[in-house]
Structures are given as C-alpha cells and as structure tokens.
Image (cartoon, rainbow over all chains, first blue to last red; front, side):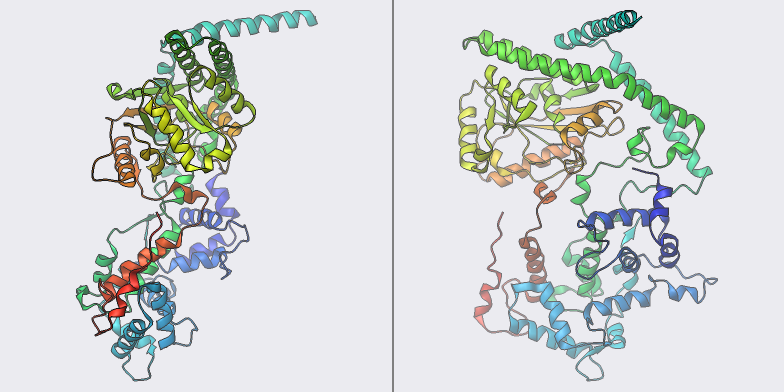
Length: 168
Length: 461
C-alpha cells in the first residue's frame, strides 16, 4: 500500500540510481520491493556478500538490454552499465574471481565444479579445463586474459544473451 | 430523554433485524435470490469501467505518476538449456561435447532472472490489477488524478465500512450460530434418512447465509459433474472461503485438523450431525492414519464426498501448484473442481504470513464483493499405467486449464521451506549430459568404465 510517488522518494539515492543505470522509476520501485522480500532478515543487505540495494541495482543494470547508441550521447554511452564492453567485463569477472585480470586454471575449475557438481569426475573436469585453456589461451601464459576472452566470444551475441527482458 | 433514545435504538435494531431476516436470511435458506446483489454487481462494474478510463486519461495528462507494472518486471525468454547453449556457441551443434566459455552466460542470465522475479514467490502475494478497483488497499496514488475519482472512492469507503460491513457481520454471526445450534440439535436424532436430510438442510442454509455475508456471487458451471457420494472432491486452494463457496451447492465431508477456540466449537458441533473427518494434530503427522481413515470414509459409499485441497496451502489464484499425491492414493473417484475469483471486486487470497484469520475475514467483509466462477470437471480415476504422482499431475492440469490458471510444477510448500538440493543437482545433471554425454563418457577419450556411476544421486520426490 502507499502511493508510488512517495515510495520512490523513500528509496535512498533513487534519483541517482535512475540516472546511473537507466532504470525507470517503476523499475526501481519494483526492484526495491523485491530486494526487501529477499532480505528476509531485514539487514539491508543480501547474503554474506553484503550487497546493499544500490549495489543490487547496479549489478542488475548490467543486464538491461543495450540501447542503440545515439550520436548525441557520444562519450556518455560508454559509461552506461549495459553497454557491450561492460557486459563482457561482468562476464569475465564471473570467472576471474580474484580480479587479477586473468582466468587461471584453478578459477576455471571452480566455475566448472559449480556448474557440474558431482555429476562428473575430477579427471573429466581437469581434461575439460585443459582443453578450454588450450583453445582460448593465445599467448601461452596458461591463463585467459580479457582480450583472449573477448576473442573467444566473438561469435556470441553478447547484447542479447546477457540481457534480461525488462518490461517497459 | 434517555428512554426515548433507548426506544429509538431498539426500534432501529428491530427494523434492522426484520430486514435482515426476511429480506436476506429466508430467501437465502430457500436458495432464492431477490436479485439485489446482481444489480449491485452491475452498478459496480459500470463504475469500475468508468474509473479505469478516467485513470488512463489521467496518466496521459500527468506523466509524473509512475506507471505500475502489473505483469511483473521482466519477460522471460523461453528455450531449454540445450537450445540456449547452442545459440550461445554461435549455432555450433552441441555434439562437440565440449565446454565453451559462453556456457556460463546461460546460468548467469537464468539466475539473475530468478533473482529479479521468480515464478513461485509471486504466487504468495496478492494478484496485481492492471487498474485500480477503488479499494483503499490497492491504491497506488490514483486518488489524486481527479476530484470525481476521489469522491467516488470516499463514497465507496463509506458504503463499504458503514453499510455493508455491519450487514455482513450480522449475517455471519447469524449463519455460524445457526450452524452450531442446528447441528447440535440434529445430532440428538437417531440415525435415519430424516437426520441426513435435516443435516444437509442445516449445512446448506448456513453456508448460504455466510455467502450472503460476503456478498458472494457464485456462478456454477457444469453442474452435471457435481461430486457424488463416496467420491473425493479436489479443488485449487485460495482461501478458507473456498469451503463456503463449494458448500453452497452441495454437502461435503470436510477434512482437517481440529483447532481450538471458535473454530473448534464449530468443528465439533458439525461432526455431530454428519461424519466429517477431523484429525488431532498428532494424527496429522502420520500419513498412514490419515490415509486409512479417509479410505474407510470413501469405501462406505453412502457417505458425503470428501473435500480436499491437495496443494496444502493457499495460493493467490493465478496458478495451480503441485498437488500432493496423498489424496490421490485413497482410491475412489476424483471429482476435480476449478475455482476462479474475479479480482476486481475483492482480493480473496489469504496471505497467512501477513494477516491472521480474523483480519483476513474483516478484509473480505469490507471488499466490494466476492465474484467467483466454479467449474465442475468430469470425474477422473487412476489409470492402469500411471502412479499417484502422475495422476495428481493430470488432475492439476485439467483444473488449471479450465480455470485459466497457470500450471506450475512447484511445490506450494516452498512458501515456508528451503529449496531442496535435488533441484540444483537436476540442473547440473542436465548440463553435464550436454558437456560430457549421456553415459558419463567424455568424448575427449576417457576409456575408464568406472565413470558409469556418476549419475547415482537419487531424487527424493
């Protein structure tokens, strides 16, 4: 209950978030409701990662469908969270958990383990990781850098696949 | 002076009771209707249509009012895991059986979609309306759109709380006391067809009075499929009022836990006149006891049909969730019933985590009305080649189809429980069969036959 317009005002930094991320007021209100219903213990943050509402919205902003670049926007377009390079960066960080700019063998193993669980054996995991590194690693340093990552995803329509269909 | 006031008050009260008894109670008991509710509903519909139009015009004129998103915030892309992965790999077929870096995108996107809006959590909050229905509780800043709208809303509040609410409370009290007194009296009679007939009459009239107490307009469809004696009636569950809705058109044997307090009194008196199946709390835990008692009831083909809600919890009437298979193992014929409330006139969903029973009933009595469609589906029985779970699923789909509800496989118990790990393992299994192949043999040349037992995790149902 309660009116929407007073609700948007009760959300901290709402205007700033709208500017930064491009979400509309209705989206922010919705996301705030969702955040509160996920935050069952009312700590103002989610999970052990201490994601507060602003970070929550910023992360989700990566998944807004990329807008057609308009000439007048110019440099500002690069700042938006949902442009293609930022989406790719987000995807890279899914793998590169220690943020050292390279996806190491161990990091790749961790991600694969999460996706496969106990369904495959350790040897199978190792061999899969081996092949993946061999294919993507072009400069032979046994790790995948951001550029190598981008190259191996050249055929993927990142804008489409890393976007959630937010309704207008 | 005081006696005058007192006299006036008594006079008003007498007039009030006279009106209630002769204009509402007696026709209700005979199953007749004076048509007042019908006219009321038509007037309401006209007003609501006008209000919708006015709001839409208001939105165009005042762009500062944020437009609500009644259908959720995101639109999900369909597509199975395999289809999506193929697309991600740029159309390369998956027979290559290898991992690609883009695979993680699929999980990431699906995961984030679920974080933003999942299919289960939204079933446990009230359905959102595309437009305001002039109730305070669903207001979203619309009352400031125009003066006329505000006035109508105020009139609505006065009518609902000042006129309708006292009327409904009176009826509810009369109805429930009638039930308790009547069933206790009938309970003294010896077993005979007279007793059964009287008991049915008492139950029916009480429920009809209660239905009037909610201004309920019920449309029954396909009455030829009504549940027969010795059968089991299953329906989708939205609120405790479902019982009143169904029992207006026939007598059922209720199943449930004995409560304390007022509910307990009602339950204990009901069971005197006809055999309902009430369980103690301790007995409910033991599935075997429950099943055998129900089986005994059904086997005596002369007893009233049992009414069961297999979802086990209240859902918000936009979808049907998993039916627990216990009811379908009893045997006997299943009579499915589909119940769909019209959300414009009042939200019938009982959100038990937000409201207790009393506040829920008060909210019901201060809504515009309850308008509900009930479809009786043709009876179904367990087929040779299916088990109870598949049968339950089949019945659920039939009910969902008829009522225009979404058919979900999720368990309504997820309202309170955590998600089981087996769901996550299922996803992992699916993914591993894409990467590694069906038999656990990796196409990258693993000649070790001991990889056969990788898929050994069982699923608990």
